[in-house]
Length: 213
Image (cartoon, rainbow, N blue to C red; front, side):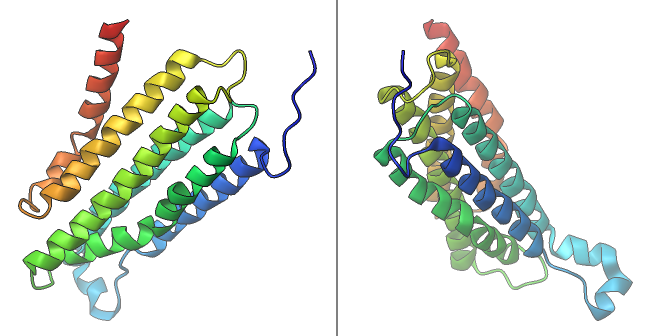
């Protein structure tokens, strides 16, 4: 059976390589945005790290979320033979919010720095932007899995059960983060603790899927 011809511009290899590059640059920029001690800060290094704890926490969360999103994207592209025009268009919001994540991470970290005057509205806005950024990134990732299944872009021997599971898990986590973005308007202090429940949301979604089989 002849291999179907892929239209120019829709080869999954080039899209995957470009996406890998954007993820790699974003992860690098996360580290570059971390605060660095200057002058007298070296004499009180422990206090400096304590003052900027929010920035380092934001870095850790954003790094892990980008890592898992990249791994999911890698897993997906290892199981497809081509991309569609709509799938290519879906990469625009995905990569946009990957690229802007270092900025929203920096905003969240600095507004939660203990050495700065607390501004409730600014802190809520920065937290909401960071959570919303993550939410859209995750929802776009889940939509990619869904689109591959709906348009049958996967390889004949692809693990369809895993693809469906990833689609639902990333959609569920994305919705959860979107809810935490909304919650930042009235319970901003509790929102970072809600993020810690992300693995539980993923595990709960996976358990529900297994019960339905």
